[in-house]
Amino acid sequence: DKHSTHETSPVFLQWLDCVYQIMTQFPAAFEFTDQFLLIIIDALYSRWFTTFLGDTEAERKRRYGAEGTATEADGSLWRYLCESHPGTHILNPC
Image: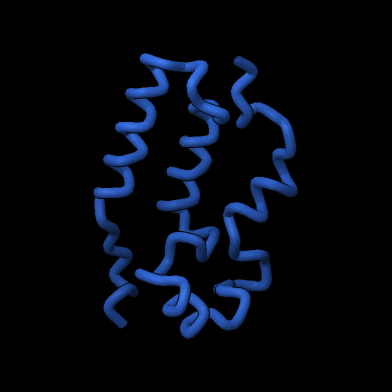
C-alpha cells in the first residue's frame, strides 16, 4: 500500500500558511480564525479523519467504504467541525 508510509505533500500545509499570512494582514476579510487553521493542520497530520486521506473522494470511498471513514468514528473533519464547534472560537468575530 503506497499510503501506508504516511507520506504527505507539503503543498497543502504551505497553502494554509499562505492563508495565515494573508489573515494577519487582513483579519476582517476571513470568516474563520487562526484556530480553525490549526484544527485543520492537526487533522491533516493526526489522521483522525479520512478527509485528507487518499487523492480523491472516489479513492477514499473505495478504501474506507461509502462514508469514506477509516474507523467507527465519523471520518469527516467538516462534519466534526459543524457538530463540535458551532459558532465558537473558529468563527472570526470581526
